[in-house]
Length: 181
Image 1 (spheres, rainbow, N blue to C red):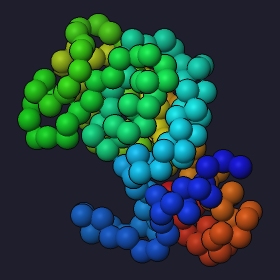
Image 2 (cartoon, helix red, strand yellow):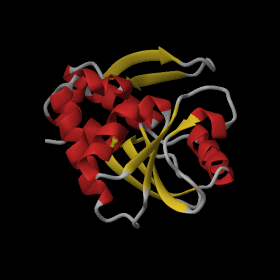
Image 3 (cartoon, rainbow, N blue to C red):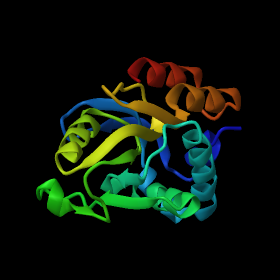
């Protein structure tokens, strides 16, 4: 079993018709910021994250966007690697970031799912001295980032496969999600 079923049962992975702020519709929504409300599930995701990072190029810092702080904190506690995180403000990154870092430390960015915002954040991070060369996605949705190595705990196809295998979702819903993703 991946972790799709527990994510679905916890309401972290939702299916339906969701309208984003930009007006686009999606057949699913992932609310990974809720992981902290489910400590056992967070612990399982953290264990899988540590396994995913075992083959990564070495790094000295974990970096997290504001919505991935729960999993990034758990990863930091389990690996002993220092965490730098974004408060998610509109301030310049040098004021938005919290944590101990200086120029030249190789870093791994922890994100719920990579997207164009992730790429922008990586570029801005380089300007303040964080050398992000690795990204760990909690659930990869297929977005490719330039010039970094991507790892993931789960992927949308694997999640959909598991939920379809145990009849949690219909074939129609599985097809809609896979077509969208």
